[in-house]
Length: 337
Image 1 (spheres, one colour):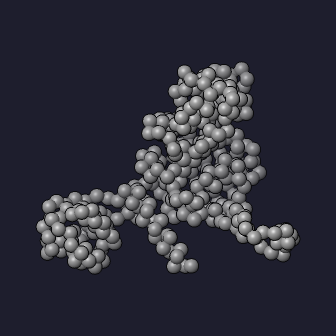
Image 2 (tube, rainbow, N blue to C red):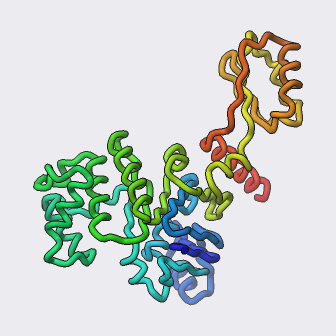
Image 3 (cartoon, rainbow, N blue to C red):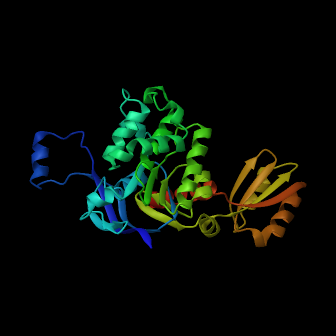
């Protein structure tokens, strides 16, 4: 069963014109002049199975938060459609909103700093539809789950960023829903609290919940996600398991520690068709490319100029693959323009 099915979703934002005056505004209003628009999402197609954790990766401005807000029913697309937990995002918008839990980076700003943690969550329990007779027990349970029960009478203004994000997570746990949309939940959070949040994401999966996780932390995505979707300029440029993306796009990395790394050596290595990039770190050379079959050739070439002290092979990390993909996409964009 699929929790999310997205078909050709497109979302545009109107660009604020710094030279806008009342004449230009009237011309735009009567369609005599076109306003400028930024395409945040461009014909996105995507499906997420129930119980799956999907990671959404991409540079700033790629469209990650816009996608999360559309899935939560907070924004409507200009084109395309989607079903969330079998509800249409346009016709059943209110049902979509009440079938998902959303946690945003910095989402703790919704809390009233003049109310205690307990009273804040009691208020949100009413908003989320928790029966009045169950609210006290439910609030106690979620505060215990996130480790804030002992501070239930404290105020949000006295909490660190990490503890505020735990409070935000507690709000999400008030209502038991099948889909969790998490937008950079560990951003600006201390390592201890970030690890707590990651462990809770694993718990959600064990409970059969579906999770969409937008993050800049590639190590986090690799550890938690069943699949990843990489966004750039509003388009999906990769969608698969982490291992498959790394295998398909990533390069082999040959690590050579040599006595002397000369410019003549690196120039000859670059001349090989199998080598795409060389990173120098003192006397260590990291040679990238589809090079497994050509290792003997590379070794002989190195021995022509220097002595090899040690040699090792590794596969590209998700971070290296991500940078490689975004760099290639940006280069394509520059060529087109």
